[in-house]
Length: 92
Image 1 (tube, rainbow, N blue to C red):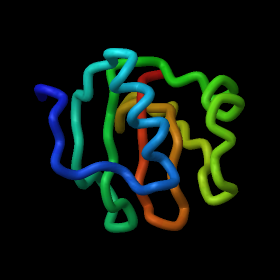
Image 2 (spheres, helix red, strand yellow):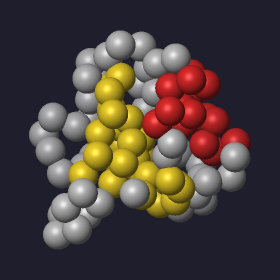
Image 3 (cartoon, rainbow, N blue to C red):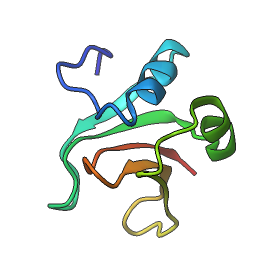
Image 4 (cartoon, rainbow, N blue to C red):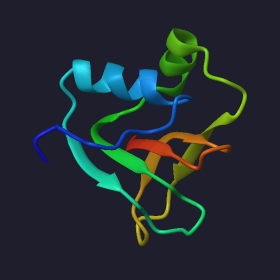
């Protein structure tokens, strides 16, 4: 991907998306993912530090942490919006 997207994550996660792009972390995927309960997720080539992101952005209570440790389905760690069903994922 060249970093230019026409769709972005919801307002609850947008500041985090903008921050990661400004830091130069490449977006490796953007779109619909594995579940019908997911609207728009982006994956970045970076480790996402939950504590730093929580302290830096004080996300809305609808934003939660997500981590998948199963190497068979693909490990990931990031933030999800439980209202809009968007997500920002990085690697473990």
